[in-house]
Length: 78
Image (tube, rainbow, N blue to C red; front, side):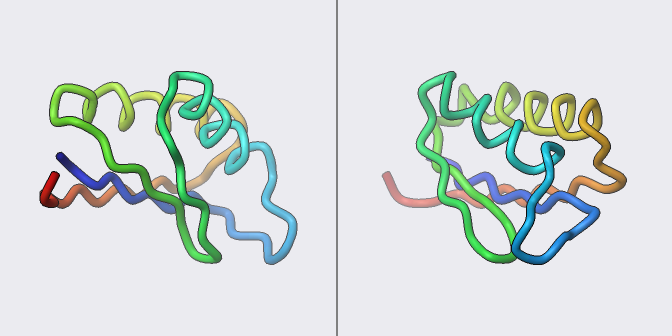
């Protein structure tokens, strides 16, 4: 299992725009459980899904006005 953490800018306190909310909703529609925190979001997925998650987040965030997307991937116990 891999934890994929992502932060998307620009950061707007208490009012995340579509560049943040749309990637999260897209992952949820794909069946992934996404944890949304005050400084970023994450989901834990099988290794075979990491590429799909990263591609979806980047593509959708940029399409909705993101200026920066940061992704961190960490191996976690299953």
